[in-house]
Image (cartoon, rainbow, N blue to C red):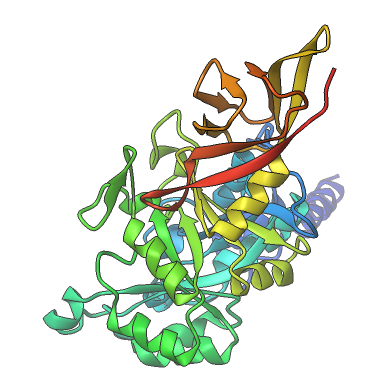
Length: 402
């Protein structure tokens, strides 16, 4: 009897051991991730779909290219960045942990933030870009450089990284290695002055974009206020003059919902992509088909903004008894346009000069036109900016209606 009991206990022990995940050489986080890709405590994920119509041959996607995790001064796991991105309506994101943390936060697996969640991101339909943030302030020994260099600190986001470990090096060495890996280079939270290193990279032909809005830096001493929102408006001019993509990023270290006002959406970069893939994202940034969307503002080049707005808004006559009595405006996009009807438009008579067009809405405006069939009408989009002094103006045909 005792022998039979001992044999039974031995078999049960072997069965339990057989069900245990392999833990040799793995961290606690890796073991838990393999056992529960989406933890049981996550009861549901509800996505805020941010839908835009196609712009010619391009799809419009939302991106955030500057995010941190527990592996570089952030306070959340990489998986939470994926859940946040999905819930907030992001299509593309890059986890960009600081390169100078590589040997301290990730001593065994320098690609852990990316490798830990790449399958989770793919399962939720997100495009995950491998990235890192490289700073002029830190050396490979993780010590501050000279006081002069520290005062002129600049950080760069490198995207499409292949080997994070190689970036744990003195700044210029790290950046050269990123360039050799084929990374794209984005100037982060640029401040009021054009940094010497940014100038150098631009002259090399290896600077692709610049943040004109950084959620974490908004309201800081280097930002300026436009219509009660903080950003780098001077940097938008640099982007246009120097041929750089305009980027808006969260630079989140804590949970993103705690780093913005409660009723405010996160900041987005809008990209016009040929395909929803890493290659499509890369092409859009290199080709400067980007816009910055934050706090119900949209900034970009006149070309990109005009294409997006023209594809998003449709105008149609409202007639009663054959007489034009109003205009019906369809906003087919996720962006809420603020519109001003420009004065001096001949036979047009509008009862209101300004209206707001909520996302995915139809708005009817009383109006009359005294010269027969309604022609085009000129609009100024007062929350769409080419620069801080210039709103986008659009001429739209008013379609024949009932």
